[in-house]
Structures are given as C-alpha cells and as structure tokens.
Image (cartoon, rainbow, N blue to C red; front, side, top):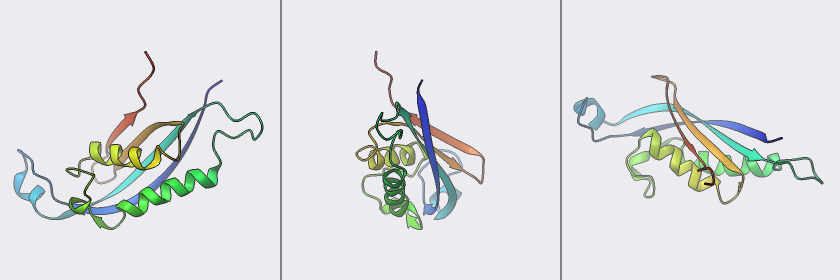
Length: 124
C-alpha cells in the first residue's frame, strides 16, 4: 500500500503581474487569499508507523507560510512573477529539503476558484 499525508495552510499576499490581457488591473497592486495543500506520499516507517512526524511536517509548512503570508510577492527574490505556478514551485523548494516524500503542492486562489499543482516526476 502507498499512503498520502496532506496538510493545508492559508496565506494572503499582494502583487502586481505583467500580462498581455487585463493589463491595467494586473499592474496595480492587488491581493489574493490563497490555500496551499502539501501532500507527502510513500510507505510509513516500520518502527513509528508514520510517513513523517506531523510536528516536522507542520514546521516546514509554517516556514513556507511565513515566507508568503502578508508579503508583497514582487519582493520575494526567488519567486519570479507571482503566478500560481511559481507559488506552487516556491513552496515545493521550501518544503522538499525537510519532507523527502513530497509528492504534490497545490495552490488555490479562493477568489476565482483557480488552482495549480506541481507533482514529483515519476521515475521512468
């Protein structure tokens, strides 16, 4: 059997975005409420029965959340343009060193029901 363990966190952030459509409103500073779901996948440790200690998992998510919550995303050097794709990848890079079984990160924007997920590539 394969197990998945997931946690979610919320964050609110502001940004601008250079686009070819809806240019004017996107260039103005505006904000969104986001939800990020982080999913681990694998086999539980035989001695503990855990895929990962939840305290460690929660610490890694709190660190990622603190880097995004109530921030101006344009000022985060290693994010790039503040798209949902880049937010998911940024969270992935922050969580992966602590969570080796990281499988998926999904960022959802509540205002328009949009979402983007990034997955671990399956071995060929």
